[in-house]
Image (cartoon, rainbow, N blue to C red; front, side, top):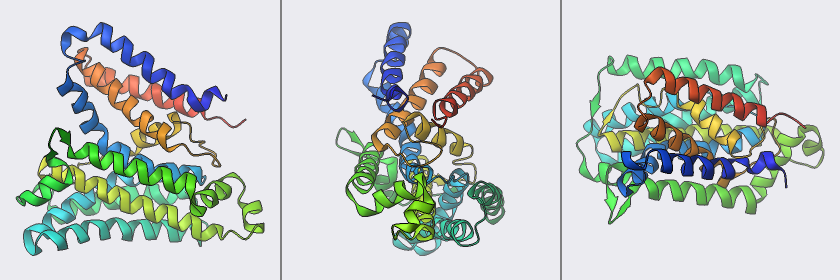
Length: 304
């Protein structure tokens, strides 16, 4: 067993037990708190599933947080002016356009994905702030709020349903389809993959396009849960998403992807955040701990 690929499960259990003992009197083990962890990590989990394909393909997408914010405001504004269905389509289209631009520049112009998506991070965030004048965009459509994260289906939070759906689809595509095998092959050795007939440029384009669309969906979930679109939604999420993917066992150098590990990586980050808040740590101290986790994630992903 490659312990670096499975350490997330051990770490998750150890941290959960530690917080259960230390913070049991603070309400850590209550059902409401545990459901809150799921709700708070749902958007990260959804984005992390798509990011698993990007990183397994030996690429990176730093724009997902900004795309989520842009999608939230585009969706809110479109729902206000045109209705529910046009609003949903507009939100997804905003992510598709940015994902297509990222994918085209990386796949066919051979620009490193780090540089492309770093630039897109600023572009999407600035665009979202510009078109809204920095003002929040309220959403009053109750059906949208119910479907996109603001409602519950009986005792089950809607955000949990979205998380399970994203993980299930991601696992099937990664482990049971030709596309998933081609993603891993391209990330592991693009030259060898090309010689076997895999159109590596199209694979790179596809994973970055998908990442943009899924990031837009995450922004729509933010908007549904918080009943408004804001350019701030998703800011900084890209680092948490990448850390969740790497902690989950996906190789930062491509060729290996673990969807279930990614889910546990996301839940682990949420677990840590929740525990630190209940323990009374201030924001600066929380940032120190999160930064240490990200460094550890990169160290564990080092190439053999």
